[in-house]
Image: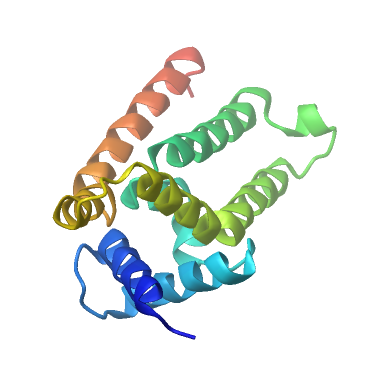
Amino acid sequence: MYNKAMHEKVLEYKLFVHKSHMNTKTSDYYVNFFFNEAIHGKKLSWNWSAFFFCSLWFFYRKMYFEGLFFLLLESILEFTFISFSISKFFAVDNSILQYYLILVILHTISGCYGNYLYFKRFQFISDRAPIDKNKRTLYFTKKGGFSIFSILLYCQIKVTIYMFIYTIHPL
């Protein structure tokens, strides 16, 4: 049964995802996932954007902690590959294949849990949102959605990490 409370929650989902009440393909995708998550508690789903872009997708969706976590894992993996030539670490000659296998596993985890983590972000923001409807609407549009600035932030962090890695271990 679809009641007024559910309607309000769907509007909040849309505001959080797309900064408007409009129906778009993206907002419909996330609203459906959020709605199913809220009802059924489903944690696993697939998100192609989270799979292909991994840490960049988390930054784009303003999930900085998760984005930084995956970015650091990717960087540690790359540093390990460059520094220790992973074949010595795993005692196998196909080090490049191992590197990409681990990277695919990391991206698969991101693809499987990206929607769930995004929903958890919504819940976190929703719990802290003001009670007043107008302030709440503004809060969701500010805290949710996506950010082009976040992509620039991601690039700056990535360049800084690369500079650090290649300072420690030049090619």
